[in-house]
Length: 118
Image (tube, rainbow, N blue to C red; front, side):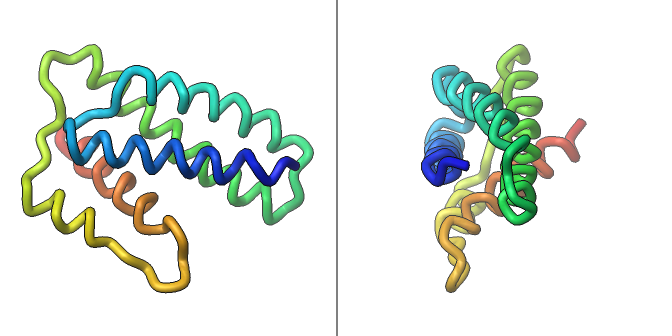
């Protein structure tokens, strides 16, 4: 498996998180990029080792939830509102020894919050 794919996907997820924090929703371009990443990850899953497959599967699940949430929100009339205090908390998420884990948790938090409103 290419070692470039997962860091590139993580970078795309970080961009989406920044857009959510700044603009309350990701851009259409970022969502399109996540769809492309999703296709790439599904292709890589077939030839992955067990450890890689676990990491790829987690990324696939996260991207699918993001796309489901924000493609649905894109069709709706209003964006998801995030309080300033929540933005500050999410920006300050840090997990010693785990690079970028905070971003995944932040995105999961936002998606869970949005899904709980339905």
